[in-house]
Structure formats: structure tokens, C-alpha cells
Image 1 (cartoon, rainbow, N blue to C red):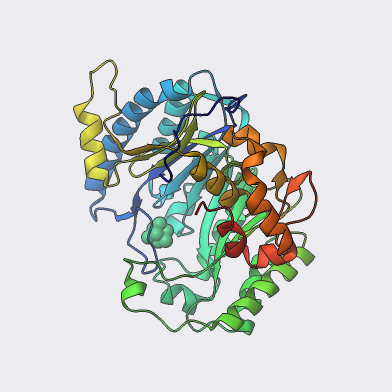
Image 2: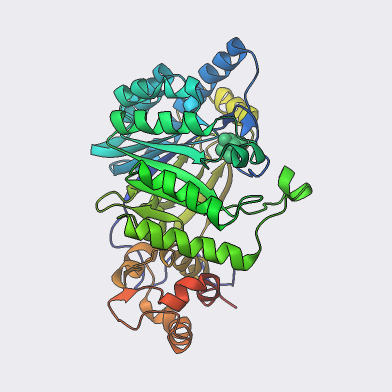
Amino acid sequence: MTGGEPTRFSLGEGLQASPPLSLYVHLPWCIRKCPYCDFNSHQRPDDDAGFAGFIETYLAALERDCDLSAPLVWGRVVESVFIGGGTPSLFPAPAIDRLLALLRSRFQLRPQCEITLEANPGTFEAERYRGFAAAGVTRLSIGVQSFSDAALKALGRVHSSEQALQAIALAAECFDSFNIDLMYGLPGQDQEALARDLGTALSVQPPHLSYYQLTMEPNTYFAKFPPALPDEDRIDAMHEAIVARCGAAGLAQYEVSAYARQGRQCIHNRNYWSFGDYLGLGAGAHGKLSFHDRIVRQQKLRKPEDYIKAMAASAGAAAAEPHPAVEIERVLHPDDLVFEFFLNALRLKQGVPTALFGERTGLALSRLARPLDQALARGLLVDDPRVFAPSEQGFRFLNDLQMLFLAD
Ligand code: SF4
């Protein structure tokens, strides 16, 4: 938190209505840890019986988490659900069915609610796709990363390019929509290799692509033993090629790393970028929730064992205040709200309507006079009073633009 100003809204400021609400559910296990990954993910136990036991206790913990968290969002309609990880597709379809039944019984999901599940394309998991769809998952996000077997090996991934193509064909058959996660700037990748990857990705006509640059995150294997990566100029050229070829194939870039066909943008992620609310359920899950007098961020206990233990210990109690699995909770200061709003909103290529700032932060536009003047003077924002949108230059140097909204 910054500054000495109170964190409750000042007179004349405050939210007029609740923002749209999403649910994020974290399932924290993977087959094994990828060398570049800094997510809250943990290698699953080798023996199937042991893992099945974990799943049972984790679902019980999630049930308790839902019971204790639901009062925070009572009466509000859920616009989207995202089941992420980890590798949620390691959970068998009946477990996902139980999870969705649990969410439906505790929260008010709107009809046609977008329900995304992250999946790996391994054969074993692809066999479950039909079951996930039958459970109510509407959108599958497939962690392909590359269609080059050599690149997949360098990334420590456990699936092959052929398995990825089979998984995509099945996802196209089973779900309303699907996303392919890809990465560029890979070890040893050149422009031709990228073009091949892109060509394969576009040939399967995905409704949505998420194309991330591989970065070296602290506390990962790659941070300790960094592979040789393409230099900055090559990375820039790769990014330009991705934007151009995706655009030509009807997948318009709408966010820094996201491309979609008309009507196929991800509702859940758009809610993050539009500074909407989300309730985080599960180990290490983050949430952002708005109340009439404050906006808070929460984080649940990160280690699955700690989370399960805290939830089991609270079982039987009618209510628990504070929530025993909330490890961090902070009320956002107005300076944080300004920065976090623009940190998210400016990732959207078309930006957001100007009015959204007041609707989502409860703050007056007059707070923005200085950063707006600076951003406009430097040509980083579109000069249109109806929107907050990065200019072409601002989108290219997004970090510089976002930093203008950081309080001194
Ligand atoms: S599969 Fe995804 S979440 Fe799991 S370790 Fe690899 S990158 Fe991380």
C-alpha cells in the first residue's frame, strides 16, 4: 500500500455498482514441473491411488472454501469460471463434474456462463475431454506451447506435436470454443521455426490463441541454468510476424498476448483486464473483490498441504472470520487502484471507455490529470476523451505508459 491517504473511499467517491464477477479455481498439480514455470504448481504423486486421495481431500477443502467465501459475493451473478493450475486436466472428468456442481450450488452462475478449463494435450488427458464437456466445461485452453518436438523437449514438456494436433481436433469437436497456448522466443528458435509453428497453429483454425514470450522467471530451473534465447531484435521481429499473420488469418490481437476471431474473446480474461472482480478459490488463488466502501485483494495459502489443513481444521464451524485460508488480504489504496486499473486496462489494444475508470475504482477522473497529460504529451495514449487506449507507440512501449500511472 502506498501513501498516507485512507483506503476507504473519500466523500463523493465510491462504487455505484458492483463490477462483473468471475470465479477462479486453482488445481495445483502437474505431471512434473516445467523448467520455465513459476506458477503455483506441484508435481503430482507418482502412485495413482495417492493422487486420487489428494483429489478427494482437495475437493473437500474447496467445498469448505466455497462455503466460507460465498458470503463475500452473495446476490451477485458469476459471468465466467476459469479452472486453472497446474494442470486441471489431471483431474478425472467425474471430479470436474463434482467441482462444477459444487460451484453451481454455492454461486449463481449466469446462463451460458463461460467455463474454461486448462488442459494438457497428452493422450491420457485428451481421452477425458468429452467428460469435461459433459460436466459443463464450455471452453478448453490447451497448453500446446509449440508444434516442434525439439522445442517441446527443450521446454521440458511431456507431450508431442502429434498429440497436440489430435487434442486440438478433439477439443474443436467437444467444446463451444477453445484456446491454444503457444510460446515464442524459444531456445534455438529462429524466424523460420516460428513461421512453421504459426503455420501449424493457424491451420487448425483456432477461435482463440494466447501467444506468450518465453521469459526467465526467478526461482525457476531456467533462471538458474538459462538456455540461449533469441536476442531482442529477433524477439521483436517474431512478435511482429505473429501479429501480422494472426491478423491476416482473422485472429485479431485484442490484448498484448491474446488473439481471437470475432466474438471469441475470452470473457474471463477480459474481466481481469477491465478491472472486474474475481473470487479466487483453491491453494494460492488470488482474488479481487469490491465492496461499497473498499476494494480488496486476497491470496489463499499457497502450499496445497497448508490450504487443505486450514480448510479441514475449520470444518464444522458455522462461519469463520477471518477466512482461515486467506494468507494475504489488503485494502487497495486509491494510488494502487489507479495504477492497477491502468496496468490492466492498457493491455487491451482498444483500451476501455473512459467511464469505466470511475465505475471500477470508485475514484474521480480528476485524479488522473497529471499522468494523462504526460501520456498524451508523449504520444502514448490515443487523444480521444471517450476512451483510455494506448496509441500504437504506447502499445509498443506499454511498460513506459503504465509506469506513468504509478504514484511517486
Ligand atoms: S504444465 Fe503448466 S503449470 Fe504445470 S509446470 Fe508446466 S508450465 Fe507450469
